[in-house]
Image 1: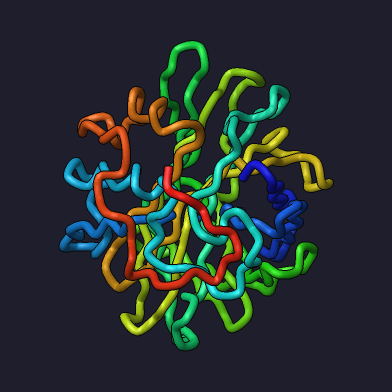
Image 2 (image 1 turned 30 degrees about the vertical axis):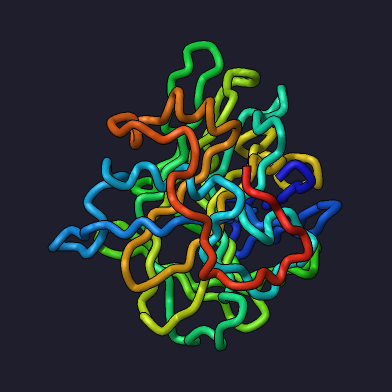
Length: 313
């Protein structure tokens, strides 16, 4: 996300509407982290018998997927309606230095969902289940990972945006918290995407943090839906400053994963792969991570609609 700034205005406690307008200033075009996401490898996990949700936010046997999801050249499919020249159109995109600016003190994990490029229009009645959203930051001095956002106690919000129009207002998105703690959101309508994020920003001291890690589980309610999703994060100047065009900066985004009726775990980390593998966050600490993507590049994704061709690295 080195060429992108993704702006999500602050929602005051008295605001009646959930709609938050996103302004993205980018030399390459509007970026979804949530803003809102090479390949995101789908990580399907066994579900808890009672709730149908994954029983943990990470599985030891699937931990290596995080590397593929953040390695260029591994997207499972591509987004329809995304700016073709944007760095994130093909998948993973990160600035060379994923650290927050020195005076920034907050972060937001986010995700974006697009219709799948080359597929028929997604089922209008289909929805997306979102669970186990978590955001960690790493302390510069101690290399300790701290949980700063947790979906179990932080609301998922968002809207339907037209990614081709940098200053567009979002259409309202229906968001419903489920009894098991997950969140149900509408699928992207024709010509629009879903941009969702954890509403209350995670906070830290200025200069204290050098990287961020985001993990979210998703699945569709309709097996016929054809949508792709990614995850990422935005750094913010503070936990409560409203949008004014200069208060946030993209930390990057992961590859695209094609969602299905089975749970998939989407992962994003800022900074280098070597740094992340050497010091993984708690959800992945029990399983050794490979130094590079272990699987083959995805060739089933077909031709990309994006104009940039990104070589694997």
